[in-house]
Length: 151
Ligand SMILES: CC(C)(COP(=O)(O)OP(=O)(O)OC[C@H]1O[C@@H](n2cnc3c(N)ncnc32)[C@H](O)[C@@H]1OP(=O)(O)O)[C@@H](O)C(=O)NCCC(=O)NCCS
Image (cartoon, rainbow, N blue to C red; front, side, top):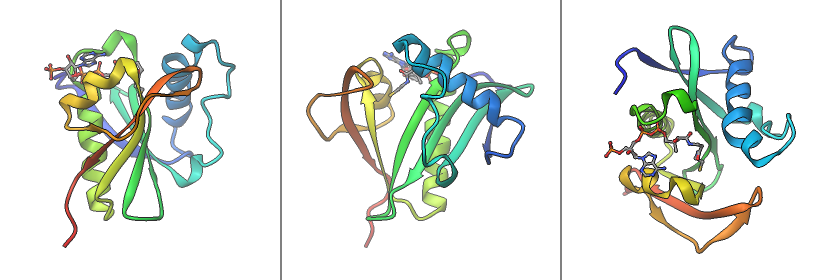
């Protein structure tokens, strides 16, 4: 793991937010030939944003969108800059998201995972909860993780 990486939860007003959006576009949308702006959700404001930065350079991010029902949160926009992949930053972001979820009384995580990322999420304890379906033009499956069983 890169010891200089710091995680920070930010709002849309934070100076890191434009860099977070740029990273989301570069990593998750440009390779699919999607237009700039396609990385922005209608529900940005109701979503929690975590960035990983090294000396104030944003190198990774992940979002958590509370689902309002059954104490579940949706993981979205998991991205690590290609120059920094394979150093544990993605895993650090997911663990940070899980801790943040539990602190906010969210006890399970759900996501629509891209096929290329299945092994990454499986290593972090996520299990499949659907068959394949298409989203943004590529194969996905829903994956989930129970963080804590409610009494
Ligand atoms: C998927 C992604 C977030 C992983 O982040 P990362 O920082 O590179 O991953 P880490 O270094 O934290 O990897 C954690 C573990 O998962 C493994 N892993 C990561 N990506 C993997 C992959 N694509 N295939 C197989 N194993 C993978 C690593 O080898 C590591 O294993 P280890 O604990 O045994 O050493 C990153 O590669 C990325 O942004 N990819 C492009 C965007 C994307 O696909 N996002 C997911 C959308 S659902």
